[in-house]
View 1 (spheres, helix red, strand yellow):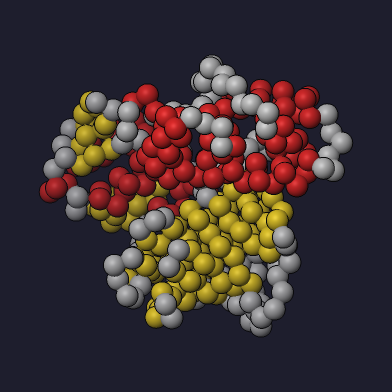
View 2: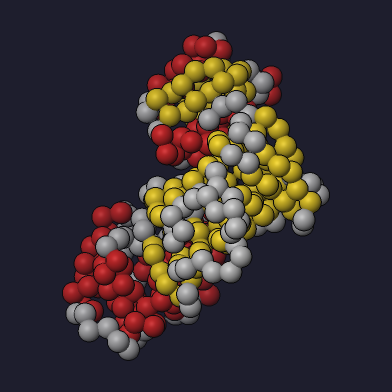
Length: 324
C-alpha cells in the first residue's frame, strides 16, 4: 500500500460511505481498510453510525449543527488530520450520527452502542470497554472488538456474536446455555469465565473457571480451567492444549503473566498491546522461555528484561524492533 494511504482522514471515510468519493478516493480507502483489522473495524463502526443516523433524522429535534461541531471537535482531538474534504448534500446524515453519539455519551472512536431491530451492537473502538448483558453476564471488550446481542434473551439459549477479543463472565443458568458465535467457532457454556479471541484465520478460547465447550461444525472439545482451544480454518476439530500463562488477560489487568512462556507466544501479544512491530530475527530464539510478570511496565522496560534474560540484542530499525 502507498505510504500516503497509511492514514485516511475521517471525512474521506464518510465520503466513501456516502458514495461521494471519486474512484481514486475509493481505492485509497479500500487499500487503507485492507491494511489492518483495526482500519477495517474503524470504517465498519463509522458505517454503523451512518446507517443508524438515517433512522433518527425524521424524529430528532436536537440542534444538528451544534452537535456536528462538537462531534468534529472530538474527532479532531483523536487524529492529526488537518485537511477537510467537502462532503456534499448528504452531510446531514453524519450530523444526525454526531447527535446520536453525543446523546449516548461516547466518542465514535471509543464507544458505539446502537439498537437495531431488537439487537444491540457494542463496539469498543480505541478503548477497552466493559458491559453488563441483559442476563447479568459481564463482558470486557478488548480494543477494536464488536459484540452483537439481543436487547432481551428469549427462547432456550442466550446467543451473541463476537468479532475481536472479549473476556466473558457468564451468569449461571443451566436451563439457558450461553452461546458465542465467533467466525467458524461456537462456544457454549452455562456459567463460567473465559476469554475468546477471534480473527479472520482462527478463534482462540482460554478458560479461567468452569467448563466450556468449543465446537466447529458440531465437532468439539470440552475445556477446563487453564486449557485452551484453537479453531483454525484448515482444521476440522478444535486444537486443545494446556496453558499456564495468563497473557490473554493483559488488556484487563495491565499485566503480562508468563509461566514458562516461549518468546514466540509473548512477542505477538506485546505487538498487539503496544501497537509495536517486534520481529524475532533468529528462529532459534522462538523457544526461549520466560517465567515472570510484567506489571504495567513500558515496552522499553520489557525489552530490556528480555535482552538481559536471554542475552539477545534489541535493534530498532526501519520501524521494527528486531530481536537477534
